[in-house]
Length: 216
Image (cartoon, rainbow, N blue to C red; front, side):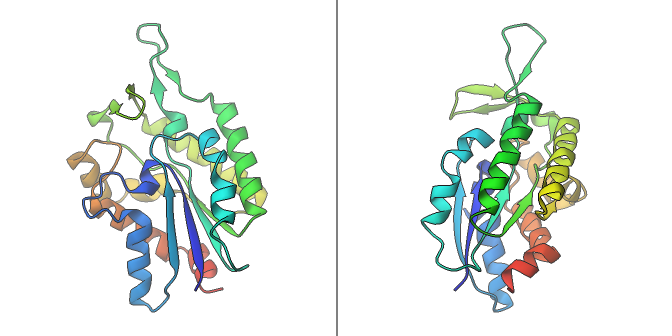
C-alpha cells in the first residue's frame, strides 16, 4: 500500500481539530470512500519553523518509505512569518527574516524532492481579530498578518514552480472557505476547528497534483 508522509507544524498536526484527525486523517477517510487507501504518517510538530523541520524531515521520511511511489505532502505553515516581540515597543520583528525563510524553504524542498515526489501547500489564513496567539510551547506571543502570509505564499509558489514542484495556494483557497474561516473564529484564530480541516482535506483531494500522486 502506498505510504504518504505529511510534514509540517501545528496546522499539519491538526491542532484545534476536536476529532484529533487533522487534515491527513480526514484526507485518508475521504480517499477510503473511493477505495484509494494509503498509509498516512502525520509528522507535524507544532511550533516548528522551516529550519527546525529541516533537521528531521529527510530522516523521518526515509524511515517510513518502502516504494518509489510513496510521496511527501509538505505544509509550509505560518511559524516563520510570526511577528514576535523585538524589545522595542510597537516594533515587532519577524521570527525568521523573509530572505532566510525563503532560502530555508528552497533548500528543504530541494532535499525532499530528491527523496520522493512532493506536493506542497502554503500557509493558511488567520483571523487577525483573535490574535496574537500565546504559544505554550515557547511561552511567547505570536502575531500573524494575512498580508504577510499571502505574500509569503506567493514567494513559496514561485520557488516551487522553479523546482517543478506542485503547489497549492492554501491561503487563497481557504480564505474563500466559510467553514475554515468560521472554524478560526470559533477557536484561537490561527488554528481552525474540525470543519476547517475537513475543508482543507477536500481542497487537497480535489487537486490534480494529489490525484496524480495517489493514483500513480
